[in-house]
Image (cartoon, rainbow, N blue to C red):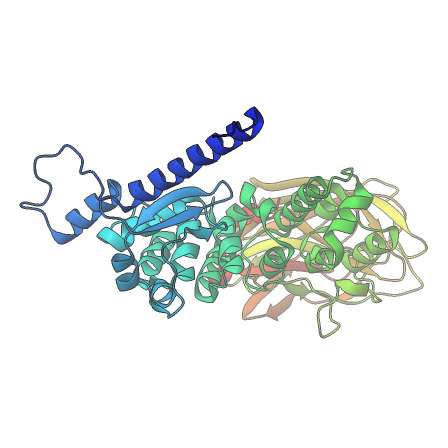
Length: 482
């Protein structure tokens, strides 16, 4: 007699049989040949590459499955192609313990990237864009598909511009592409003013930012360097989830702040754009101002590796000082209570860029001066008019004033430089020279009829002029002096 099984046990056995049948069906299906797509003929008249690419697309006779990305998307391929195109896959599939029956996991790559890699391996073709080229290059490097790697590198070189250069530099660093890194860095340094303003600058790592702003040959106005670093530090605060304030910005900058060459800025530029916030300490701001006023003393970590003030980059052209008054009597002073201007006339023996003037400062205490500067030629045409406020240090007799723009002076033409000063009495100079030759340029000085405060060739204010030789001036644009 047959004994009836309990209903619950009967259901369990039934489910087990069903599951076994399903498993057997999957195994049978996987062993069956791939059903060809409804195409009448995809081989005739086609190249080998076209046929293999067709087989990949329609998964014809595929014998290996990859589970790609974090979602484990299944991508099927042919071991024969993989072995013939990549030494990494050759080692994977031809080793004694190779198991092609099991899916191969590739969790660290996006499916679209892996599909681009496969398409190149099958057809020698790949579709690249600025968005995918980095990932495709990393995939090609990982599996030693050198032909694809070279195509990606060539694409990066041909599509490099000021908007993506910082992004490409970051990619090259992360991918250990040393040659690309050097090429991208050189491009950024040559196009510094534009690259520093690109949004991708704020996305770079600290190491990449350091490599850019520490470079002597960075072609950029130092104010742009400072603004770029501030933007990067603000982005760093956001990435770390902290409040964007001066203290946190300074903390994010760390030692990068000492790579900014504040001494390249004139005092007005520094005062209006840097000293107005609390990113630099009061002591650091004092160091910079003291240097601008020719104070001799410690400037802290803003010195270079030799301990000298760091105020130039390779692209900068020296500003030359032409000094006409040879000494200043320390016990006497020059007053401005009458409100009259000080001026001097001069000519040059070759074209130069007139960059600024040297003035005497207060001899008794720290003081602020309101200064109006005017430059005219022999026909009284006004070439420059500038107003500014300057703080001076009594320990240093002179200070430099850099014009907001450079003025090109013609040879053997008379020019008149005139200053109106409001403030405390100052040092003054004497033993003036009528002719001074500096760096191959001879300046000849004569009395200016508009100098009502008694400055003349022999004594008074305006002890020196600041200039650059025109033959070297094209390296820096006058727009940098704003």
